[in-house]
Structures are given as C-alpha cells and as structure tokens.
Image 1 (cartoon, rainbow, N blue to C red):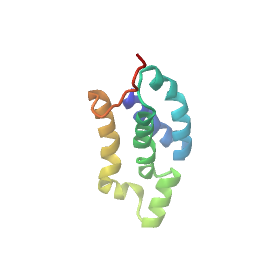
Image 2: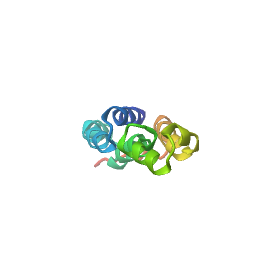
Image 3: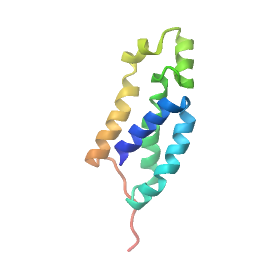
Length: 110
C-alpha cells in the first residue's frame, strides 16, 4: 500500500507539473484505504511526501525542478547524482512499507 502511494504520487508529480496537485489529489484518493487497513494518517502523509515533495526537484518540467535548475544554472539531470536524499527517501519508504518497519497502526477499541 505504501509503495503504491509513493509510486503513484511520483507519477502524478511527473504528469501534473506541480507537486501540490499530486499531494492533495493523492492524499484524498488513499485516505479511506489507509483507514480501512488501520494505518495512521501520518503514514499516508509520510508516503505522499516521500513520493511527491522530495522528488519534485528531480522532474525538469515541474515547477520545483525548473526553479532549482534556474537557480543553480545547470540542467536538472546534472545535479541528479548529488540528490542522494531525494532518491533514497522514496526507496526507503517503499522498503519500510514492504517490511512493516516504522509503520504505525491505529489502536483498535476493545
């Protein structure tokens, strides 16, 4: 579930051209699915951030990527190898979703 959130959010980030559209639309789409599985809302927020906010600087036609490239004066793919956090964060989020590490669940009423 968490992996699909990260992957879909990154895909929307690439297609929409702005991270805000991807984050808001994505959170609305997956909110009920996370509730049904008993996952805390913070997990959805973390997965959306890892898939959208962090990776938006790596998409050249995204508003964030265009700003970074213009500010640094280099093409987006030139600084891609130095974006270790931007690449590692979504991959670790997917790994944590698969293994269940740091995935908090809501407490059920007895």
